[in-house]
Length: 130
Image (cartoon, rainbow, N blue to C red):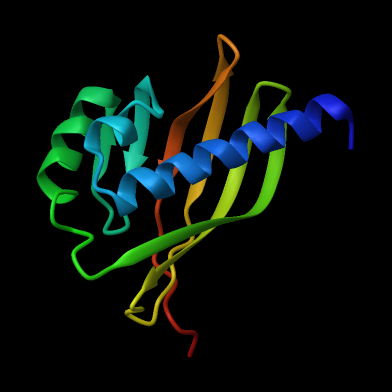
């Protein structure tokens, strides 16, 4: 792994940690600030949100109070650099106490002005296999 790529992975890891921190502490504005202005976000239940304003409006409704008696962790499973400034980041999302099904988000991030931002994100619940 090249030095620059290793540094980018650490910066991406910091964004993932910031998402975790913002969600655990119900910090709506900190969460929303991690997105590009024109980002796309698909929630774990399939709701599609276009742009930071729409993501912010949705998050202001659902995040406050959502973490009562819950904790969440995000762990990077894989990073695929599509270009040096664009990465697909596969994340494992776990809630404690668990509802039994972890999340499997895919977050495409873009580096702009030296900062990695969430750009096109899909949250998916992992259902038990048959």
